[in-house]
Image 1 (cartoon, rainbow, N blue to C red):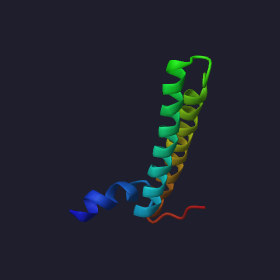
Image 2: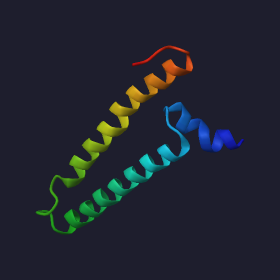
Image 3: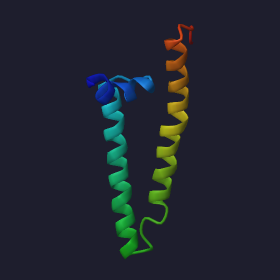
Image 4: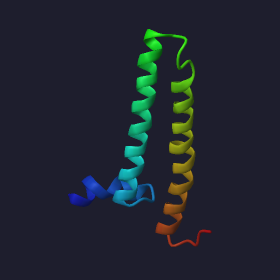
Amino acid sequence: MFDKVFLAHPHSLGEGYFEHQRAALDFAGDLIVAGFACAVHAVVPALFERTASQAIDRLHERMVTNRVSRSSKAIAENAGLSVG
């Protein structure tokens, strides 16, 4: 049960628990900043016109592109294949 709750997801991404925790907290911080920029933008539309959308683009790049390459590496390593 412990492994399923705390380790299965990070390991499926080729990460350890603390590595995944740090990445998730880093994403959370970026999302909080982007959310604040959206709230300010809602009140004063001339401010932070592209801040949130740029943050989302960066987060997508980090999450999807990097995760795909890490997941592929983890899958290969779990299968006993040599990866560079």
